View (cartoon, rainbow, N blue to C red):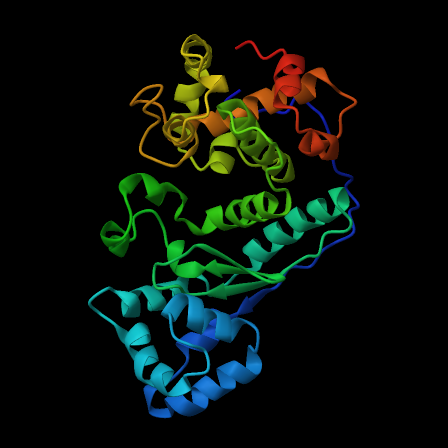
Amino acid sequence: MLTACHKGRTYFPKDLEPQRIELVRFDNALLNVHEATIAQDIRVLYEEYPVFMPLWVEDILGIPSEDTLYLEQQLPAFLNDTLYGFKATNQREQELFADVQDLEKSLSLAFSRIAYLYPETEIPAMYLFVSGFQTPIYFGDDLIGVGGDMYLGSDYEYYNRVVYDYQKQTMRKECIPVDVVSAFLFRTLPYTSAKSRLLDQMLYRGKVMYLTSRIFDTLPGYEVMGWTKEQWEWCVRNEQAIWHLVMDKRDLFKTESLILTGYLNDGPFTSEVSQDAPGRLGIWLGWRIAESYMEHNKEVTLQELMAEGDAQKILEESYYKP
């Protein structure tokens, strides 16, 4: 229970066709720019990274990509700033990500499993970059960027200036594969229901998290969810009371935005349930319902689960009764 045990169902063969993921080290190239040779170094970045460099300049620095003269003036500040801690952060990122083989191995296995389920999937190119504390995961056409400066460890000192305490739990290097894969799945398997009830929203998101947990089937559930072990254990201990409260309040069929965000959005707690309940509790409930549905319907494949848009049917046929 404590690690979201999947009771023996196997979804993937051992001899999957490999999908080799290599992180393109844009971070190294960028952080090796020198102020004395800034114009030449910028030209080299545009030549060697013709797709990612313009995106990074426009979306991270907020500078028109063709304005290289202004970029020459602004880039040194980004690389060497001490007020916001960019210089120390960029150095820390270089140290922590000196070796990315474990990340590449985990991502390669994950995308091999995604390609097995969805052979038509185009595997994106993946870039490691620094974002100035702006974004952990970045999407472009046919590419994913990972902001390494957003994964320097929950205790990294400069995070105290830019995020809330509850957000630090997932700002660790080992969280990257789950963040990349779950974001990719949310992007490629979009919400299609015509209804916007809490039930529909939490089951859609819960299905994505269930699929993510199957892709990373050796990870404990709390790591997939982005919680601490203690938060997961609290939810398991109180699962029956949580479900009864949700049912008693008749929240499942409500559509008010405050109700939806209260159950589904990240936060220090889920106020609709308890200040002891971790944020995004509605997604966890959706995951548990999806898991129960799959256990009671052994013939249903992962693809069929994800394609099923009738949340009421999934709930009824899950026989979810914590």
